[in-house]
Structures are given as C-alpha cells and as structure tokens.
Image 1 (tube, one colour):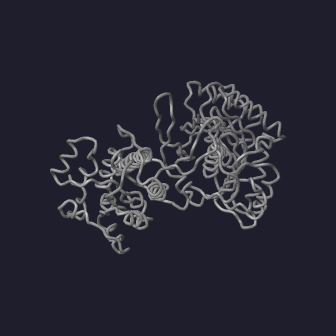
Image 2 (spheres, rainbow, N blue to C red):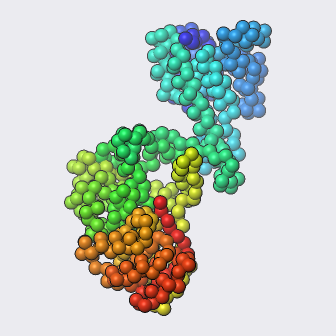
Image 3 (tube, one colour):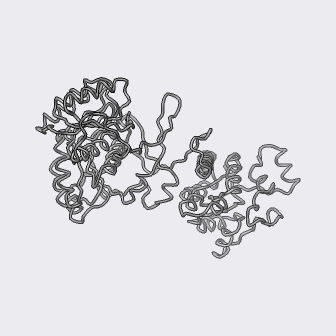
Length: 522
C-alpha cells in the first residue's frame, strides 16, 4: 500500500486538478508543482511547494529544463525495500515522491491547429514522459496518474483504504506506458510526414479507442473501434468520425459496410447513391441534380432489390423526405449521408432501430491514406486505392469507338467497379447499375452472375456498358457480356491475350476502352 505524503502535480489539462489537490492537502499531503499548475493551485488558495525548491535548481531555457533532475527522478525511482536506495536518498537529500499527477503537452491539438513546425516541436513534452515512466517503473512505491478521468477513482481509494494498493498502482502504470508509447508514436509519425518518409524502417501508428463494440464479425469475436489520435483531436466533437443521429449502437459489420458504401458514393459522379451488402455494392446510381436523389435511389434499388433488404445506404448529398420514405419501404440497417432535410429526420425518427449517420467533412475521406492488412504474423501496408485514370489517358483499341452516351456509362461503371470485390464485373447504363457480379474466382463467372442478376430483375442489358476491375484473361468473359447485350466495355488491358479479346470485341461490334489501371479488391 502506497501512503501518499508528497505529490508532484504538473498538468497541461487542468480539468479536476484543483479538486484533487485540495483533497490531498486536506489529508496532509505536501503538494509540489511547476509553472502553470502551481499558479492554478496557488490561486485556489492551496499551499504549494515549487519544483525549484525541491531541486534547489531553477527552471531554465523557457521551461525546457525544470524536472530533469536527480532530486526529482531519485524521488520517483527510489525503492524503499532496498537499503542502498534509501541510503543514497538520505545522502543526497532526495525526498520521496509518492504520487505523480501528470498529463502531457497537447502535441496533437497543436498539430491539428495548423501551427508551424517550430511551434509543434515546442509542444513535444520531454520532462513529462520522463517522470511518468520513472514513476510507472517504480509503481510499487510511486503511484502515477496520467488521465483526469482517474482522479475520482484515486480519491475514492485513498478515502476508503488510506492509500493506493499495488493492484491499482500497477493498472495506472500500465496506462502510463500505453500513453507515453502512443505519444511518442504520434510524434514519430508527424516527423515522418515532415520528412516525407512514407515507409520507415520502424512503423509507428497510434490510435484511440472511441467505441466499444458488442462483438466482432461474429458473436464469439471481441471487437472495438479505434481511430487515429490526430483525427480524434481534429474533431473532438466527432470522436467516431461521424455523427450518429439516431438508432441502435453500431456493430463491427455496420462500420465495415458504412465505410465501403460511403467511399463508393463519394467516388461516383454527381450525387452518388449506393446500397451495400457484405462490403459489396448491390446497387448504385447517381443524380446530376440534388433534387433527383430519390430517383437515383429507385434506380439503385432496382439493380438487386432482394440483396438490398437489410443493406447499408449511402447518399452523397441532401437526403430529403421523398428519399426517406422510399428507403422505409424496405428494411435497412443503416443510412449515411452528407446532409438530411428536417422532414427526412422527422420521418426517420419513428424508426427507432434504424441507424442514421451524418458525415459533414467529406474531404478527409477523399484524401490519400494508408491501409493495413494483417497477414500471418505480419502487417501489409499500402496506399489506399484512390487512383482514377480519366478519359484523357484511356485508349480505344477496337474498331468502334464509344458514343458520348457510352463514354458516360463507362465512366460511371469504372468508378463503381473499383468498390466491388474481385473478380468483379458490373453492367450499367449512363447513371445506374444494372447487374453486379462480385467476388468470383473466375472473371467469366462474375460476368455470368452479373448478367443473370439483371435478367432476374427484368433489367434490359441491350446497349449496356460493362466494367471489369482487371483484364479479361480470355475472350470467354467478353463473349458472356456481349451475349447479354453490352455494347461498350472498359477494362485495364494488359493481358497476354489482349489481341484475342480485342478481336472478339470487334466481331461483336463492341467498343472497348483500356484504362491502364487495375482495381483489384480483396
């Protein structure tokens, strides 16, 4: 049990620190403090001893050097069960510090404020992490608190037990090492960005837990939702990265599907409307005018109304009452949009279980990012697939060139197919999907599934456009889409059998476009 007789308090976030200090002072604890914290405590009428008085050495270099002193770290690290430690403390006049209350300079807030590099560097805490680590290492004899949310627990334990037991002290120490590791990782990541180091030899990333999840992909799997610390600091009002307006708590699978659906909706021309099921679009369309979003939703749902049941719906634009009523015709798990009309929200309010989410800052979803995949005992690290080659770089190897209407359809299809699991084939018209074949081991199977789904839903593929996420390895896939009625195809090209596929297209009067960019999605 740690009996607290002397406490060192030095915090950037002063939430609750005066009340904690007053509680300690009332129990005869000597308060030692620094700079702004000492002023806050003194202004509250508390007796506070300066760190200068403890060390016999003044703060210097604009506060850069104030706690990096043997009388501080000796007081934190000294083990009371080792005679040599106790003797050394007596010999050198080192006073034991029993409790350390510290939180760090707000580096994350400084970075997201847009401050210049020099100002960011001045907000890298040195003394704070050093004291936290010293105290945490010696946690059987020195308790350490780095989070204001733990003050209540700490005071309750001291009040009830007369001190801090080893179990609590060890848990607080673990929290310290998590925090200091995260703090250093965040700084390392920032320096890598400053120097343009995209693939450092040692990769560090730091994430904050923002939401517990009931379970993972399946009920027997534990799960939680984490976001980059800097992103949380950037929008503390939206710790999850979005606003959940109503509905049940989000699940692991909901978050996966919401991300896929929303990314896809932003990628489409105009105001994209996407319905996703198990990470795959099962319907997509776009409206050139925001007034026609409801019509786009109707077209998206036509593509595969059976799969749309229980799906995730994403809208890049204002979701109005008309669209809300259409959505309500069939069960949906979640709706995510960039804006809602008041009437739409009033209508949704009666559907208590429907999860309704809003994202108002879409730019961060469009910015290039890194993606991670865990494999065996390692991690894969890659650029997010935000690449999109446009018509100016595309080539047409076939005899027939696309019409302007076909160019529009191919552009839409190419933007959509990137979000369909490989092997992927999509049939579209100029503004809506007609058939989607996803996640097949062979491209010809994906083509057949896409065509059969369109037929099942009575969607005419005559004159349709087709996109393939990767090249056709043989002509068989092209023959399938041609037989279904497609008249224009877009694909990366690059197969050793490209000439065979081009010849097949020419035989059947198909205009084919090569983009030179593949969009595998595993």
